[in-house]
Structure formats: structure tokens, C-alpha cells
Length: 471
Ligand code: URP
Ligand code: ZN
Ligand code: ZN
Image: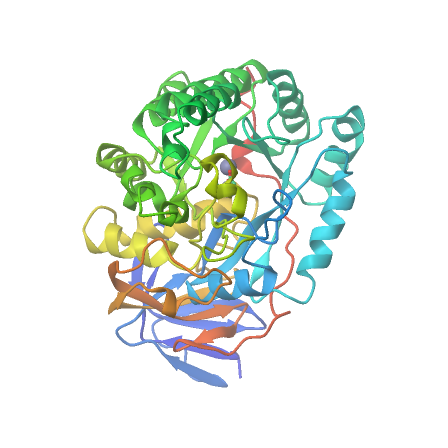
């Protein structure tokens, strides 16, 4: 038989078109698309279903070390299983360097953590914390050659924040090697100043996390990152943009012809600063950086998605358990928001939220949904067209969606290591019922059928978006 599997009778959507056809799969690849592909070892009935490229979440944190006493809620098994239930077939976590560490060794350590654990495919971005001559001259160029073609740099956080000259040096290596730089844009000194002042005034509850990182903190850093990138003539991706003022910096840069890209996340569409104002420590559940803003910022982030200012919609999944002294209820965190672990879970809810709030409510088209959640991630990070689309020759990474299924999001439905979801009680219409990785089901009709180790590490090519303007 020509096919191992045919997905029959569904509505297939890519980033550019929607059509009814069978999807023929052989040896893990899509080998045919057509109205009636005949017989196969297995026929999957997708009548009344949508057949979409598996989601790619290019911004997740898994098994990442934090400060002493803090443990991330997901390892590679739980994080990738949750992602699979959320309709994803690939995630891009970070390999985080800490000061004094060799980045090559860090990458080896992450491979060891992920080995035989993953339910879906993974690839690593590199977080650069220690900008040494050896890192710039040897490690980074060699790692880019080996398929680690994107770096994340932080402008804030103790132990991670890079100075402007360090940012320039990293950007310069990115330009020379063709890597894409992802920037966490918040002004570290401004945050430290405001945090000190808030603590001196006794304002230590989780809600003051948002007060300590207001919009100008993000806007200024976004402007500065863009200016540094302009000096080097290197494209950059501003990740997790939370508001219109930071977005305007991207718009202005693009109007000047610069290659500046943007990402936003579910928390900036659905949550606000008010969510951090829960009773006792409940607000800690929503502590993430940048913090959620207000309704006007939410509306502007929707505009950014609709207008293509944000090409990526990622989760920034960074889970810490709530009811846990190694998580959000870290004893020190009760003394000040400064110590509450930053980050919220979201890898399993990213796709249903955007589908329901975006496609379902007429804010974006189905094709834009596919672009924002899969195809653009593959293109941006050097995976396209093997990943991120439904086309002959691509990996058979597919999510089958019931567009009418109504679900109330609740922690009891989640599959990761966290003990809460920030979206508890949110009603969504449309749910990924099955997820197929390279032609094999990982999740089928809501049940786990894959196993840890089915997911593979994927070395990436260079991003076509990282090519300098030539200025
Ligand atoms: O609060 C967040 N976003 N934590 C994750 C780390 C990061 O900055 O992306
Ligand atoms: Zn970040
Ligand atoms: Zn992040």
C-alpha cells in the first residue's frame, strides 16, 4: 500500500489556504494531498474535523534552573506531554547558561535531561548569560553550525541581564553567524529602583510585581534593543510583548526599514494587572514578566496579531506549582514579590485560547491562526518546510481539531506538572482532540497513546528572517 495512514474527510488548513482533502502519510511524511487517496493500512476519519499543522510553541521553559530552592514544575516528560494534549507537535525550550558555565556543556546537560523523555519534538534556543571571549569567538559560532541557530538575551534579571556592550557583542556574533537574537526587553535598573522603593514603603504583595515593571520599563528597553540592533544591522525578535507602547517601537522601527519581529502571548490577551491582586498570595499565580497590563493593552495586542506586527503567538510557558514551597509559595516570596518565581503555565492552553478567542470570535482567520501558532514559528527558527505546514514532503505533524467542542478550561483537564492554570473557568469553543507526530498518534481522541522518547531532538537550519539588511 502506498500509505501507512490516510486522514480522510477533514478540512485541511495551512497558513495560506483551506481545502477539503485526504492527507496521505508514509514513513512519517506527508506524501500526498488529494480528494480520494484510496486505501491505506489505517484510515483516520476526520469528518467534521479540522486538520491543522501541529502547533509549534517556540517559547517554553522546561526543566530550567531558577534561584536556589525553586523547582520548575515541568520536566521534559510532563512539559511535552502537556504540549501534545494542547495540539502541539514541537516545542522550543531554552538551554540556559549561568555565569561561569560553558555553553557547550549546558547544551549537553539539556540533551541529557531531554533524552528519552519527550513526547513531541524539541529543539533548543540558547540563553546567554556570560559573555566571554571564548563564548563569542568559539562556542557560539560552533553551536550555530551545529543547529542551535537562535539566542535569547535578557535585559533584566539578576545573573542574566546583559549590559549594552554585551548585547552588542552577542548581536555582532549573530550577524556574523546568521543566528536570530530573541530579546527579553525590560530595564533592569528601573525595576531594581522601583522594587527597592516599593519594599521601603511596605508594598510587598504579589500585585506590586506589576507596579515594579510598568510599561515604560518595557518600552525603553524595547527601544534600546532595537537601537542596538540597528547599530549592528542585525534582525531581532522582541519576545513576549505586553502592550501598545512597546509594540509602537516595533512599528516605528519597521517603518524605518529595520527587520524587527515581535511575539506576544495568551497572558497579554486575557489577563490584566488586576489578576495579581488576589487574596493572600493568590496573585502569585499570575506573576510573570512582563506583567499582564490592562484592557487597552489587550486590545492593542490583538491589533498587533491582526496586523502582522506580531508574527509569533507563543505561550512563554514557565510553570511553577502554586501550593508548593519550591514554587509560587516559596517562603521568601511571602516577604516580597521580588522573590516570587516569575512565570506561568500555558503550553497546553495556548492553541485553544487563540482558536476560540481569535478564530471563533472573528478576530483572526483560521489561516492566520495556523501562521501564528505553527508556520511562522517554523519559518522564524529554521524549521520550515519540514515542520509547520501540511504539504507533500513535510513531516506528518498534525493536530485534528473538533471546532465545535465546548470546553471549560480547568486544572483537572491539564496534563503538565503544574497545579493550576491561570485560565481556570475560561470557556472555549474548539479543541485539539488528536495529535500526530511524524505519522504516529501521540494523543488520540483525548487519550495518550504515545510514549516518552517518541519525540526527537531537531537540529535547525538558519532563519531566513535573520539575514541582515546589508546596511
Ligand atoms: O515571567 C516569565 N516570563 N518567565 C519566563 C522567563 C522569561 O523571561 O521568558
Ligand atoms: Zn523573557
Ligand atoms: Zn520566557
